[in-house]
Image (cartoon, rainbow, N blue to C red):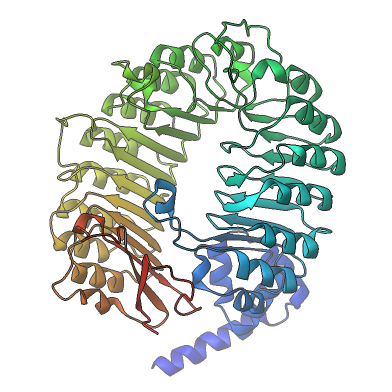
Length: 591
């Protein structure tokens, strides 16, 4: 019966392809942008797989060690755009040692030699050396349109100057949150300004790179297409000429209201000029005395980032109530419940909301109103029905608030909640029923994070997560469950789950291994905190072909408690890593 079914599928593939020229089929596939849909198309038959391979223009490799550049080239020889990730997300929170790996060198050597159509390269959480950039520029300078070094490290400003001099077609240079060694000050910006006239996006936000106002003004004068400029700290009064020159600028981030090595002076920013085209804004270190700079332009803003400001709850309220057209808002939890109520009343077009944890020891964050609870969550859920992305840190939460999210936020495809440890007493625990209602209502969810405290989500709640997470592909869970039964219940569902991260859950090795086997779509598993078996070998129960299992040593100087032990397991066609540092111990394959 199985052989007949396979023959039937092959005949169906031939019928579907009959009469459709390869050129036409490739053109049709070009309109299918979702990578999951393209993957499904490639499985119809071998012929469609070949056409997909030749017509696929962009690929994201979510784990650099999951394949090799040679294999990728054989599969997709006509790629024009590649996004490549290496270090686990945990590296962003200093949970992974700096020497973990993630070198871009083998990839860049192969990309430079064989990917003849490559125009766009995005490297994320990778180590990129000056030599790597030199190799890339020599091979691709004449065609490179976009270069994104996203949270990368290992390179210096002379390499940026080389890119600026050589890549004259470059439209996007993205360096946000990268660790860059500064050897030639900001001469690379001058090189970019004098050698490039087509640049549309320059982003070195949240880096330590210095930038002179003169070079930045020269850049916007010569790059008439510049739409996005995100810089490091630069005194705002020194940028007035830049903004009067940049008449096409749509997004700006950076600046500063603190002049280095100078005494703080109150200045009047009421008449500060921004170009009328500017709709997305993030200003560094803005306080109550400077927020008047926003008021004349607030009604036109579509994106506002207040995460790096010194504003209190009342300041947030005054600003937000002037921004009725916001589509993206990023703040810290100092905005408080009252601020979120203003958001709900004012920002009816809001699609993305991010509320990060503030620094408890500084600024207005000691404001007693600067806490988020179920009150603010319910207000936003009811008042902002267009939300598709919502990440929030809360000090208190209830089942009713989570149920409100499931009832009113039906368009969410990404929801992340962190329950902070500030309050001793939480109004209502466990949150099992609220999570069930949220997942049942938000049927479009593809990414879900729920980082709480012990007792907030029981084994029953994990069963609900498994049952109602039909479309979720990425999941982060922290401090959830009571026993191994919880992860077993979850693993019986989640049919689409490809990436799972667990922290502080303390399931046993055996339970984790069985869950990895049960989750049929799982490609990636990261765990911090689990109960080790007496022999330390129970993890081997998850062994299967093409499945790499690695133990990450958080502290090599002494015994490691269970809550700090880390496991990383992932599908790989490349076999065992060959560049493991002492902090990474391969468990499988062993050789």
